[in-house]
Length: 452
Image 1: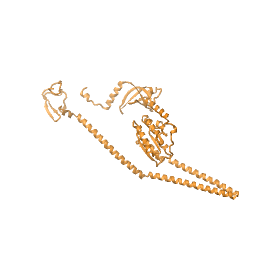
Image 2: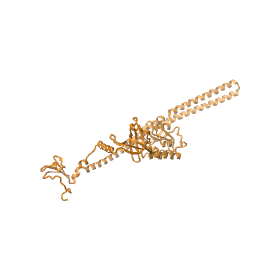
Image 3: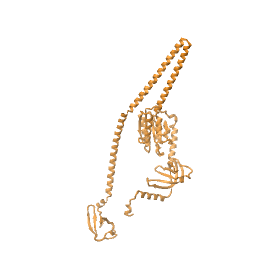
Image 4: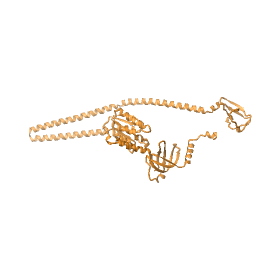
């Protein structure tokens, strides 16, 4: 390899093209793995991910090929595919275009999941007898989900719309990736140890099957089953089901549905109260009218003692009616007081102070994060400057080497100069002007310096 070849710099497109050429030289290859995702596009092309314990490769089988398939793979299947591996330049990902696909049994993850389901089912963690009823009107709700995900915002939006004035306790956790199971368990334990929430919501929004695996983890399932507080689990979309859903007291199709299951609709509740009140008053009026008619009949019958007894019963009914009306009024006043208290608790000025405090904390956190990032960038810059300095041509000159220049152009071959040419020598420190006394082509020596 020549010096020029060693210093050749490739563009991204060139190296991608060369790698694709190398992959093309391999020809079609067989790959075996477990299907971790599978999608059929509108174009009827099949898109899937194939993985083992250490790696994952994306695959595609075009409709012109898959139309001859007599079966479709599903998540958890172990399959073998024959195809051409290539790199897609625009996003730098590599994939395999499949031309053949064969079944190779059930995938390891699918088998482990089925064994875990059977184990927990045998232990009784999914029994309906363990399911606890949710409180009808909770005052405090705990939420375990990602602080930055759309699921949290969906839950909060529905809760505020259906029943404002609730106290909400949020335990942020990671819901995706290797650290997710421990993070979810820690959030559930924190909410249980806090002990103030009357119902818990745990879950996340939709995603690929790989993204939802944390909610099939045994640690998470057992933590949900062991919760002292009734728990609603909402993972993904309506079509997604997890082992956590089976262990929870209530399974909701989506995070929004979980919020709907947790609290009643205040407007519907108020309408029910008004309906019951009207029904009660109507029944009391009918009872009073009935007794009055009975009294009038007794008057017409003549016996004074029967009239007196009827009057007594009428007085008792009047008293009962008054008591019922007063009780209804007192209940209304109590509800009014409770609603006024909740409105005071949600005073905008108090909320503004709380938001201001949160903003100050966020600013401090941002400053700290910026300082740390700045320090890290400074360290990287110093390291890069050190590397550039080490690679500088001037460093080579300082070790005793020199560069010969003719007309400001480097001389690398004796054929470029002739006797009596004036050259400029650049040294580690300074430069010198020399004249060529003689030239010797193809000089061969065993040492860089004479006498060695």
